[in-house]
Image 1 (tube, rainbow, N blue to C red):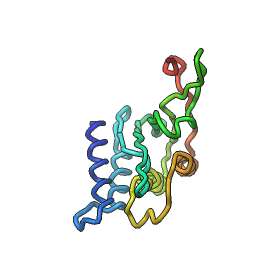
Image 2 (cartoon, rainbow, N blue to C red):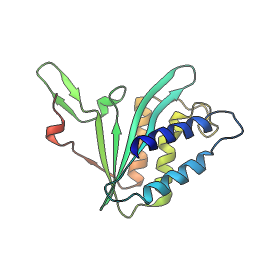
Image 3 (cartoon, rainbow, N blue to C red):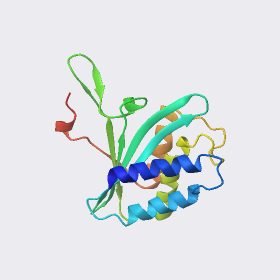
Length: 168
């Protein structure tokens, strides 16, 4: 179901970022996604496309993952490019390396309004032509600040990457 979530989410986002008259609305997508996260079975995952785009400049793709736990949701950011210097790092014999995954625990009870606001924060940077985005430009640093603000409102705490995962 995870890859299907990712493909469906990407198609929905692409549709409401166009000027077509037949598109899913951003509020509808946000509400639907929040409801899907709320009803996930414990241990189940939900994948979402992420990153940013800027008119005429391109952008960067990131994948977001939510995993339902007994304590709430674990939120993963998968990023191996721009902005990965914000991730946990380790030193190899040749150079400093950054882990491509960043993890957070969002504890229960999860405020549904804040979860919807967070989903909106994850989606807006991808919407190059959407009215809710306006003229705001995004890059790795502004996206990271935007995500951190949303996680703060959800009382999320960063999780350490398990040592065996942080090897070359």
